[in-house]
Length: 174
Image 1 (cartoon, rainbow, N blue to C red):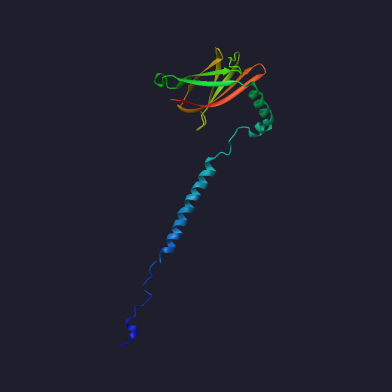
Image 2: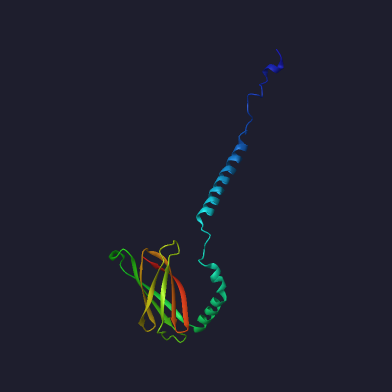
């Protein structure tokens, strides 16, 4: 009997760990697939438009800086108070928003005319505007009837003659 008859043949057996390279290939394949899904989603869901009429607004940039300096020189103090109405009474989310304007000396600013814009920060198509009505003693009321509750960006523009004042504040309606 020869010695070679007792040695097993290496052709029919695999070495331990033969499948380790397939793990690496599989992990990188999953990472590649997830990245491709994210890239597809990013390209197909973003409209590319973050600001309407960006070019025109860019041309007016220096005018905006000058208006901001003039507004700061006024030294006005503006406060807002949101008085939510009962949402069960109406399908809309109603609120009275009281905006108070005080000058440098703390005296009420009267005779302003303006409007308030309500901008939904999370979705398009729900924005609206409402007039600003003077209540006296520097207090102005905006009657808001918005289709959705939650956070809104309130932008108020008030004017009296050549004087213009604008501000923005995040508000919450239940």
